[in-house]
Image (tube, helix red, strand yellow):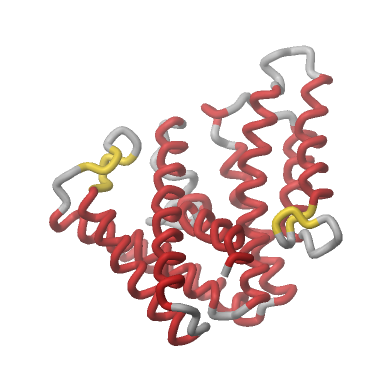
Length: 265
């Protein structure tokens, strides 16, 4: 527990000042987080073959382009441009034609990388976009994710009796999931209404309930990826917490889902 608390304190001491400052400082931090997350992706040996160095480099360049993409005339989802998406597709797929050995680099490897690079890149780009819109907006989104995870774990340990998805995440319970959903939604709704914008209360509740659900789905999806690769954590960069992907599992889905439906608010 002590190790977990120290790791969290160090992470907050890095992230919070960068978040408050915003601008280039936050962008650099998002880039570093993206690089660390990408490293965890390419070391998942069960999901792909050993990747050629040139492919790893091109994948990293594609990821950074997605993270730092800005507004232009070809917007796919706000800041993420068609150019960055197209570069990613070409950079990952074309090299499969030049490896005669089917075990060297396959189209399966390429689509695996495309999926993960898109997920990480769009998530971190959405983080920067949300910060540029309202400094408190990310607090609202993190409340949904963090409180869902925290109360699901606490209540699940205290009164959890029925397994949610035993084959994917044996420790998650239905009782914990419901508790996390209710408490995470309630606190986040109150925070948004009082500190960000007094939008119609019913609409805010529906939005937050949707994001809470998406966050739990994201958590389960990342748990499934770990189970398929026979690992407990993606890495040990944060002792007691795991890796970068362990920390952004639910928030990444909350972020991109929020950006996706933002135009309807």
